[in-house]
Amino acid sequence: MGGEGAADAGASNRACRAALYRALGDERRLAVVDALRLSDRTPGELAELTGLGSNLVAFHLGVLEEVGLIERTASEGDARRRYVRLRLAAVTELGPVPGLVADDVLFVCTHNAARSQLAAALWERATGRRAGSAGRQPAPAVHPLAVATAERHGIDLSAARPQGYDAVVTAPDLVVSVCDRAREAGPPFPAPTLHCSVPDPIEGGPEEFEAAYLELAARIDLLAASVTTAA
Image 1: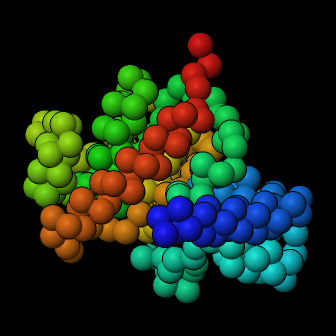
Image 2: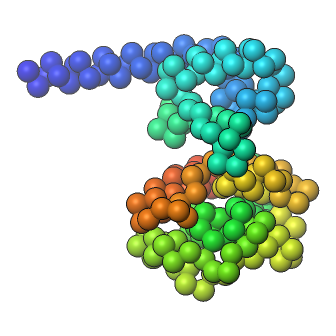
């Protein structure tokens, strides 16, 4: 019986992989997936990046969603806006991620009180390179649950302080927003941008902060493996 169960599981896994590979056999869908490798994007942004019309983008997104490659979420800022994201569990099936070159990475969210602080710290731990963080409307202090969550994972945010965009002294060459509102307001830096649509944990408790941390950790690991320095 155990052997039959393992065989059934293996067949199911192969069927899922075959469906995924069939979906990626269309180069237009592959272009959509490549555009989502390191950044969540709106359907309109995907249409612009791929050169596909909005109807075609909608069709291809439907195919990719059916095989479990993508998911769509509503913005926490403009509720009419939807972000499309790759499911992290499926990324390992897709092969190497397109690389980027950046020496100064800046992580941004609205208040610079949780997500962008955690993201910058995770980047530094993953790469050994410094990163900045800032917010459009900086809070008076880093949220205590962000500090506690970081501490549980071996990261010290006890001395971190929120700062606004005007306090950024080194011009970034890559800006990563981890907050829908910050993304939609537009960080005032002439640099390429990526977006991670991470739910805001501020109104929640330890579980919400832990979920935000784990999602950021997975996204930062992927980003760190894909961004190299110019030196």
